[in-house]
Image (cartoon, rainbow, N blue to C red; front, side, top):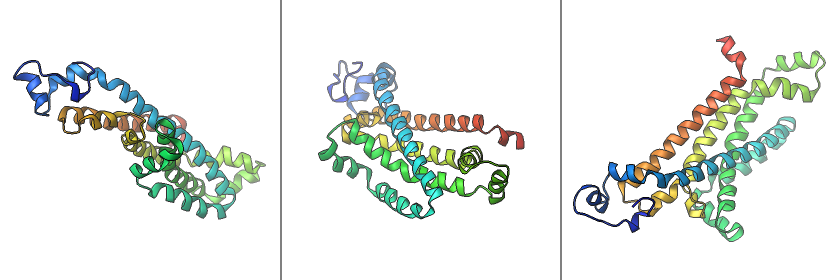
Amino acid sequence: MIGLPIGQLQIEKPGGSDQCVASNGFCPEWIVDNIDRYWTPLLEHVYLTIAPVVIGFAISMVLAILAHRRRWLTGPIIATTGIFFAIPSVAAFFLLQPITGLGYTTAMVALVSYTLLIIFRNITTGLRNVPAETRDAALGQGLTERQVLFRVELPMAIPEIMAGLRIATSTTVGLAALAVFAGAGGLGREILIDERFKSNVVVAGGLAVLLAAAFDLLILAAQRAITPWQRAGR
């Protein structure tokens, strides 16, 4: 029975785990025997989370730096990324299919678009929260505008930037479960196989929750590692 889709499970004997499967119940024995079926979907889900967040972070950083230097760009960028964010996720997957087809490309385009507004707003907020006197002091010491950005403003904006990254990552973990409608797999595929089977829903959904928590802890640890001055201040 290991690795078979839910619909192909064969009931070999009355009672016990097989009866539990037949009644779509919660079957701990079945979970233990079939846990290996979730590793590939879990790895796909990890990819569907990390890749869009990394791409979205890179795009948002570039846009945020441009908007920080040219304040008039902030409104149009927020409006555009806000439109992307407002599109229902399932609808986005289906709308993109005539252009990008089924598969990871469609999922990536949609998932990246949902990260842009969150990360962009947090980066710009962090940069603009840097005290003016701090920036003036850096310029007074002879730093160029570029040096002030990378040596003063961005380091001081790290807490807000990482907060946006945490929100975007958690959101993407959830949205990636719907990437199955784009033909991209992930843990959502396991739920879609038979959403009535309680064991399947509990394991696939539980793994998604644990994945979101793990990413959140990793980002928090990274923030602590790159902001030693905050620990020193406390």
